Image (cartoon, rainbow, N blue to C red; front, side, top):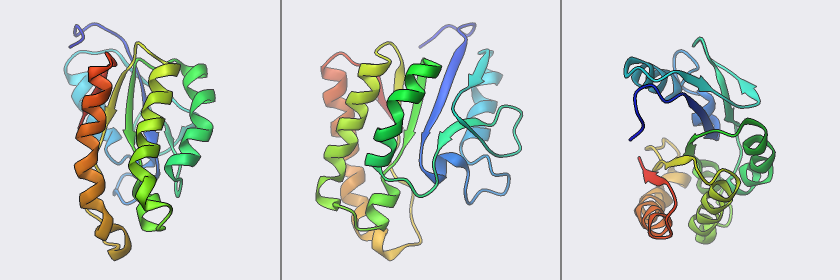
Length: 166
C-alpha cells in the first residue's frame, strides 16, 4: 500500500464501462474511485486521452465499443505518454458481447496485462472482473471469463508484477 501522500497518476483503461456509459453522471466507477482515493488523502490525477463525465478530473482511456485487442493497439502510446503509477483495467465485455474469439479472450487479457506491466513496470495494475450484463450473448460467457481473471492475476503476481484483482 502506498503512503497517503503518494501522488497517484491513475489511468482508467478499458471500454465504455470505464468511459462511464450507463451511469447517471457519465463517470461510471471513476467517480466513486476518485472520491475514495482523495478521501484517503492521496493527491490524484486521472490521466488519459479522453475526457468524460461530470467529475472534476474526467481524464480516462475508456473507449466505447472496444475489444481487448483494440485497447492493446492503443495502450503503448497512452501508457508511455502519461506514465501512470496505477492502471485500472476493465475490458472484455465487447469481446463476449460480440462473440469475438471468445475462446481466446482470457489469453488476450493476459497478453494485455503483460503489455501494460512491460510499459509501466512500477505501476499497480488492477484488473476487474466483468459486471453482470443485460446481453444474453455476453452473459453466457461472463462466468467463465470472470473465473479465469484471478488466475491471470496470480500468475502475474508470481512473476513479481504489481497486479491485483478487483
